[in-house]
Length: 472
Image 1: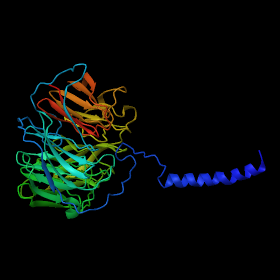
Image 2 (image 1 turned 120 degrees about the vertical axis):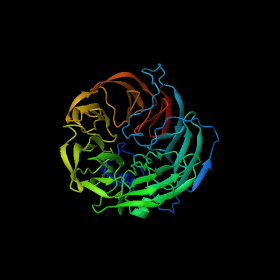
Image 3 (image 1 turned 90 degrees about the horizontal axis):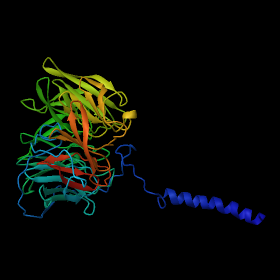
Image 4 (image 1 turned 135 degrees about the vertical axis):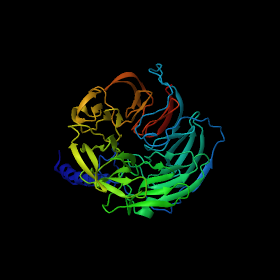
């Protein structure tokens, strides 16, 4: 090899390396790699450009199809907030080889928002990427026909999905909260817009990293929302849009992905919210409605998605992922007030935990899918007795792992959806489950949205598909 060639090579190679580095770091040659697990990278996407947002500005009436009535799954975790259906419809114990019939299917924008079902109508928030719009869609449960949609422009960038919440519906109102904390209240039949609220602008709410995850709540005609900004919780009259009470946020609790759950603890009706910076109890009724009753600050995960679960008259279970684990909080009367104490806590290798879905309590037993950091039992469905949340009484086994998928109980059966769209059907036998059937409903991705059920129809979703199946 000539000295002249070597000299040229020694000059050219560094030049090529410089060009390659510029090519890579400017993004021209980078390969887009996006982690699928929310929160894994602990980063926040650069916010989309700001525009003037008119919440609920546009409406499209799409069909006059007659809608037969149905049983209801009208909000997050159902009418009793326990994720257990009371619908008496008998459900099949096994399926044909082709699986349970798919009644209808709809392609959505990327997200994990799930359905509410009320009076034969299915409601779901969807981000339309072509229109760059947050959109409430209303479908017929029986046929999948889209009846109407209400939407407004709000630029968003994908960040492990966009839409994440479930509407709250009554006979008179439907309340939604979009990915940027935009609240709409509508007539559930006509889609007429009654009022709107921007929690970011009006309350200084800081939208969480992976967009709004809390599901709204309607109690006695009052919409209950975690503003978690200048105020902590607020109550809004659905008929008028008037804010009827506000809870001061003296402890600077921030918004999480958890939802507000009504409970009666130590004989007092209260709304329990697991925010970032503390878990709180707020009076739900009476002259002190909206008053902060207690706050417990030792339980303070940096990422919070599951909601709290009441397990006794004065105790609630709290769980989280990302290394946090689980614990028990006891609420007691203290003179004219209340105290809340974290009486038990463990990491995810030592006991009950959950990364995304809220556990289900059946009698004395708690069911959950353990998170990725739970050691050998990671991603398994596991059962604990409520009096001992560190020792499992049943586990699905190493061959039965479900990722972050949702689960629901109906007709004394558990339906469990794996991340990839595989649906498992289990029968309860005391504190254990027996597999009855299993079918790949869809070649899905990130099938994380909670399941809804009514009249023997399950509404499932993955990141891009909304599916109604018949499990009667």
